[in-house]
Amino acid sequence: MGKGGSPLPETLSLRAAAVLLACCLVLPVRADEACRIAFDLGSSGVRAGSTVSDATARTDIDYLADLWADHHLDISLPATAEAFNQLPRQAGFPPDCARVAGGFSAWRMALVQEGADELAGALDKLHRDSGVAVLVIPQKAEGRYGYVAAQGRLGGELRTTHILDIGGGSLQVAGRDSAWGEALGQKAWNRILCNQLRPNGHPPCDFREMSLQEVAEARRLIGQRLGGLAAEIPGPVTLTAISRPVSQGIHPALRQLAGAGLLEGASVDAAGFDLSAVRIAIDRLAPLGAEERIRLTGITPPFSAYLLSDLILVEGILTATGVRRLEVSELDLSNVPGLLADERAFAWARHYGCYLDRLRQLGEAAYDADPAACPSR
Image (cartoon, rainbow, N blue to C red; front, side):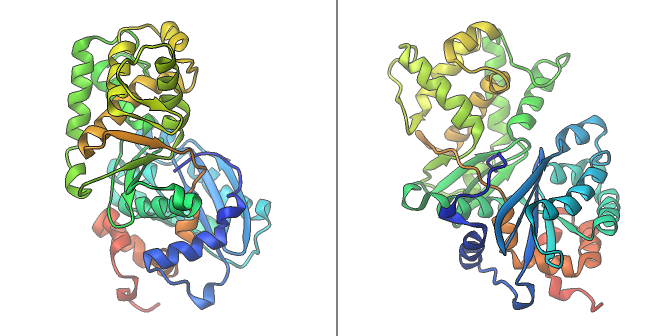
């Protein structure tokens, strides 16, 4: 989801978002859980919110760096337990609220890399240390959270069928009735491309002086990785990008290139850009060194290191969905409102031992199982 630590604006408070999500996702809030706290475990930190307050609190934890160091989420777990204890105090939440945490891209990756048994054991210890149940949330559920929250924030300004949310570890293309996701966030895709094209490099690779052959290979790779997108998202599709890799990287770079007359025939304006602008920009920027790219685009670190891989990623998404123009609207969204309204998540928190058993058996699909089928405690 969109990054940043500022509270949600008054136009969509956490409480209002919870009601909206509960309505749209058919996830009723239980009467005995009038106070809920939810923790969004993103790829780079923890964010907390509650149904009884519009305050939010967050702390930075680099889960992807932890996972990529040795294929285990381990070093970051004590800091996570501390965040579960400290963030509600910082935000002034009541101490006796029901609590649940959603683990997203890094936690889905950990499930694959560590294996279900090891991750379930780590989550069990984290629960004993903090009292908070961490669920591995499937990408489709995350996509639903994002679309409804974006709709609540933008209202009538959201005129597209779907949103594009590029995080650090994963991306989602999500609408009201369909969603698709993959572990192809900004950092994850750059790392894949770096390992494939520059195996002696160290991510993030800025892909300076990229050859025509490397560009062609990158396009082939992203085409393969996005092969299932069209089947999951039936057309016609229109898209609004809501995250900073586009709003603070690609879009301003394209506007500067267009202003310099370097994207002839392409359409770029304050609200978005078309596919041809992305294609021309890739071909113009690929052969250049880092300093020349920064001069032409005005994009500086950290976004400059990811600019070319981000462009190739977005080109692949637009091609796969048949979208000719991408609208842009930066939003500071999190998964907190979705979690607060998610009855299934809080039901699993009440049957957490059973959830961990299902996680060992079913992997990510444990979330979609029925908590009511668990043995009585």
